[in-house]
Image 1 (tube, rainbow, N blue to C red):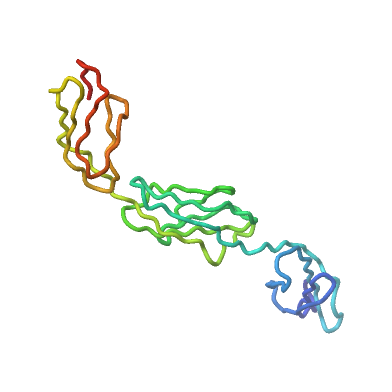
Image 2: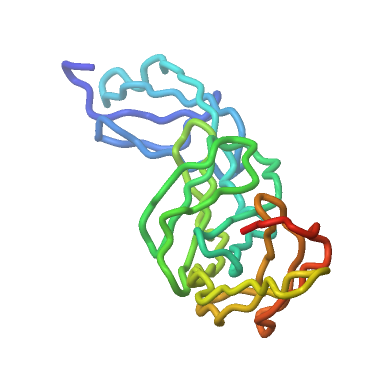
Length: 212
């Protein structure tokens, strides 16, 4: 507006709610999320209030944190993040590691695998994006995950060949985080022993057979 305009009257629906001399106005509705019709009319002391021009907009609800957000502490290749399906209106989920954004999980996702996590404890936050507005929740879901040290391969593996009915295998202990040893005959897994066990007897091999 130009000429003798002195300011602007702000309307909510048919009701005037405020007055400003600026060319912008921040409207914070008391009614919370919903669709609002806001109007602006010019004002002068000579002509009074003009006819308002209206625009409608939708205020979305502030998103809530996801539920049951958890980070794995039992993997050597990264950290698995999981959470319950989010039922609100949102664009996706921002994943943060130690304060830095590392990914966006899409709508409907309930897990994310962080292959870039380093050894030791790592703090994670999962932030919900609201629909269209770009707003994010004020309180993020958080969890701590840990990447375990990959175990070393067992050394000094020896297989006896002095028996007619079985093969006895021994080895030196591995180091790192692990729960035990898987025993293989060729490409077949034939047994598992705990981390404190350093031997295994293969009773299923056929006489005269050579395997590794």
